[in-house]
Image (cartoon, rainbow, N blue to C red; front, side, top):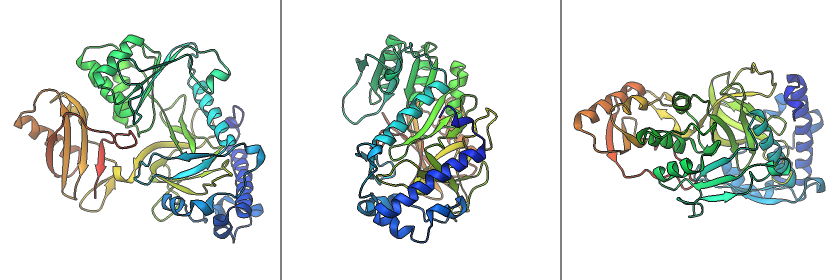
Length: 421
C-alpha cells in the first residue's frame, strides 16, 4: 500500500477492476442474492461503466436479505468470519460478516494513517469517545500500557488513555490537564465542547500536538476553531462498521483520500448519475475484500463531495467533504436543500454556549436548543434569531428552548442539525 498510493490513476483503476471482477465472479457462485442480481453480468468482461449499472444495495436490502446475501462459504485464505453489528445511526442497524482479511486491511490502513501524519509513537495518546456503559468514566478513565493493535505489533509505544465522553465536559478537561497527552482523539462535537470549556476556564491545551476526530462529520467552522485556538490542523478520518476505513485525511490538505486499494467510492445524484467535482451526492461504496457478506454498490446513507486530484501526488481519489446524512440537510420552502451554516461563532459573542442543536420541524419552523452558561435576555434572544435567519437565508419562525445538557444519539453521535421533515 505504501507503493500503490503513488501508482498512476490508470494502474490503480485497473487494480480495482481486477479485484471487482474476482469479487463478482465469486459472489455469483456462492451468494444466491447476487446470483440473481448479477445474472446478466459477465465478470470476466466487466467494465467500470457496466459496473455502474448494477442496482444499488440499500441498508433495507441488507436487513431483509442478509441470509441470501452472505456467501455459503468463504475462501480459506481469508481467515475466520466474525459477526459485525452497526450502531444504527440511521435508525436502521444492520449486521454482516467480516473476515480475517478485512480485519488485516483495517489494521494496515490504521498504520497508514499514523504514518501519513508522522505521529511520534513514543508519545502518549488519549481518546475521549462514547460507549453506552459506565466504563472509563471520569475522574479515572482507563490506562493502557501501549497504543494497542496494530501499532504495538511493530513499535514500542508509550501509554494510551481512554475516557468515556459521557463524562462531564469540565471533568474531561481536568482529566486531560492531568495526563497531558500529545495526541487526542474524540468526536468533533465533543472537541468543540472542550475548546469552549478551555476558553471559559482560561485553560491551556497546547500540550496536545494533534487533535484527531472520528464518528461525526467535521464542519469548516470546527476546523477553523481548532486552528484559531491552537494553531493546528484538525485531522479526521471517515469509516464505518460495515466497510472499515473509507477515507483518510490527506497529510497536506484538509480533504480526504479514498482507500482505493480496498473499496470503490461513488458519489451519485438522486437519479443515479455521477456527481461533478464539489457537487454533493449520495455515497455508494463497494468493498473489494469482503467475500463473506459482499457489499456491492452499497448505499451507506451519507452524502459527500468528490474532489479533484490532489497536489500531494497520491493517485488515491479525493473526497472533498463528507457532509453527513440526509437528515442533516436543511430544506427551504421553495424545495431547495443544502447543508446549513448557522453562524454560531457570532452567537457565541452574545452568550456563553455549552451546546447547541437546531431542529427543523417544518418548512417554516425550527427549534434552537441551547445549553448556556447563565441566562439569555430577550434582546439577546432576538439577536440570536436574527443571526440564525441571516445565515440560513430564510426568515424561519424560531423557537428557543433551554436545556441542562443535550443528549447524544443511541450510537453516541451528536448532530448540531437534524431535520424532522
